[in-house]
Length: 426
Image (spheres, rainbow, N blue to C red):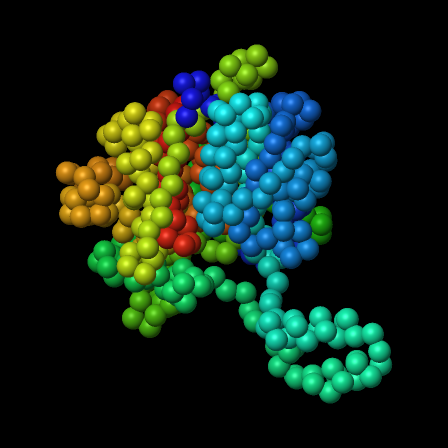
């Protein structure tokens, strides 16, 4: 990063909703457009000053794969603003923020919006390549004889859709299977996973009750006339007893259940970035600053799929000029409770530090009183492309509320990727 700090002026996210529920009839472009429009509204920025938009999405709709551009059109912001879609799986909007920050630092732009969206409700079933080729040939047939010849080759199986799934092409395993195996490797038990899930719901519910989220979650009016104001998956009545009754999802002898994993979710987020000096010129008060960002990748044939962030932590801290002990808040993305606990064990392990990171001692000791203070993805939800933006806003608003200074964000992602960002309060 440059010597001048990159300011995050503010931003918003929509409520996060379980897929195929209240946002089912809203496209990714519509949800993303709301986040962009509301981000401009709450920060007070003149839309004409926005130079670029980076927007993350993982499951881009077939009819408009550059969802950043489609969301911009839906937002009503000037069409002259260039917009680019970013896909780094679950770290997409974190990468979008880092990308906008890098462009500002390089002098390519002055002001940008970063964020992301996911509409799992809009993800469509796929058809086989054989079926796709057949229907394309049928559409191109010019004569009746050609059409009849193709129709005689029709197979009923062409109409059988392949349900959307979240599998690693390299390993053939789902994210949940990989997380379950990661939990075994780090000896993470079912009870401690359920306890973390329970605490996630309790913290998120308490945060809503004390109006923490009302500072940066915008209301969304749905096509059927409802107004959604809160995350829909937070369970105030969750209990260890209820969580304990749920059956394992991925393996019969596994520990990951629907209760200690993040649900499939719809939602969007957006944040406004510029140099600190530009903010002063415009009379804007930053919410905080992007201090550093680092990413890492691991070989998923030999390493746990979701361990990537641990490899990026030391890089991010070094760039920020901080040690682990100087951090006031940790926001570790809760893809699965097993993955969070395994990540904590790796952070605290001298053996992992020495054998995997080449360090003389463990990265640090994780203080539970600093971890995911307002709940995480297990309770709030996880719209893949939008979660990074949620974490940025959540970290900075918590730093402001508590009067603390530094927070770290850790996001694991498919493909053995990990992203880590260090933020500083204003």
